[in-house]
Image 1 (cartoon, rainbow, N blue to C red):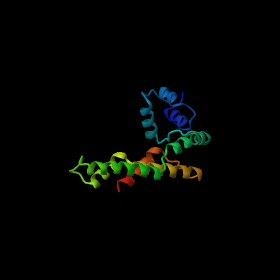
Image 2 (cartoon, rainbow, N blue to C red):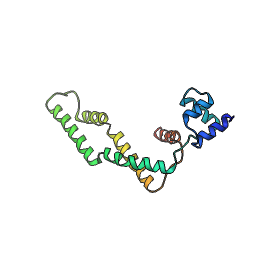
Image 3 (cartoon, helix red, strand yellow):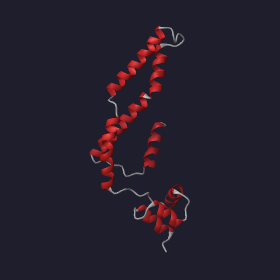
Image 4 (cartoon, helix red, strand yellow):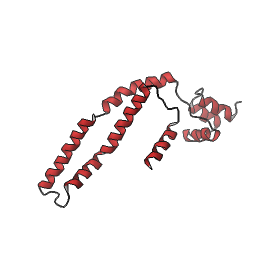
Length: 151
């Protein structure tokens, strides 16, 4: 019979599925398996490089198609601001300034989030194509990003 360490090691190497590891360890769910992996100091399994490449190749066209060119987005945002200006001129928002309306439109449209996402996706694509791949777990990368945002 395999020890818990052996089972976790096999799962970490991708030799057994998460469901098999959960069953053999008598755990309740995937969350418990992740905790056991962390407690034992094991990394979560990673797909083989050819599978990662296949997934990236399949996702790239979808990501690129979903990205709106920044110039087009700025034109859309400008049109929304102009609608707000027209509302002010017509007296529909007499207590608000044009700057306040423009700020609201920008905030509601998520402009900054979209620009950040667009840049991050492009950086990821560029890095992948240049062979710069980060082997850290996604949680580590997110912790680093959140730490930078908190500066």
